[in-house]
Length: 188
Image (cartoon, rainbow, N blue to C red; front, side, top):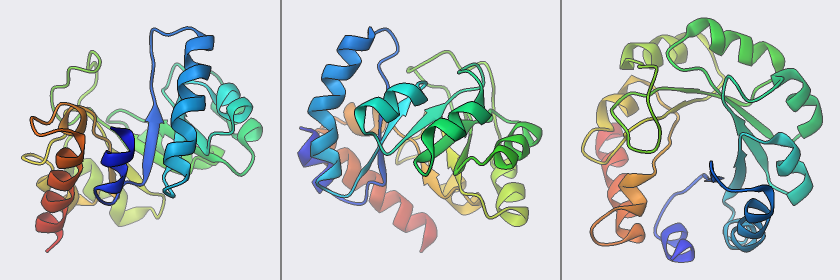
């Protein structure tokens, strides 16, 4: 199923996000998923854990604000990708850039079922960020093919999606194709 989804269109990265799993389960999942993604040129990012990203050979890590010392994670990851969630905060995003993040993530833009969205962001934040900074911005939170257009037009460099792909009624590959069509329509 993962291979079909990744083969269906442009996918920049796969985030391994197993919030309630123990380290052994995360290791087993990563060992199964990593070669599938990397064989297709898709970066694999470990959610919350820079240490596991390095240990398991991931391409990087995505950290939330409560996921440890970001500067230490930057040093640990070396030239691997570091992304940091900045909610709706310009200040947090600038701090992330200062410590060497490779991208900042803003959101949640829409209600989401993957986690409790304590913070909201508006498309104007993406406009501001893209006007003043070169560091890529990822939009997160409840993003679908139906609602992504304003985020793309506002300057999101990447869209983080879960349900739009994995819960698509015609399967994950159709979800990827639908997202890519919506992105192309928003940029065209």
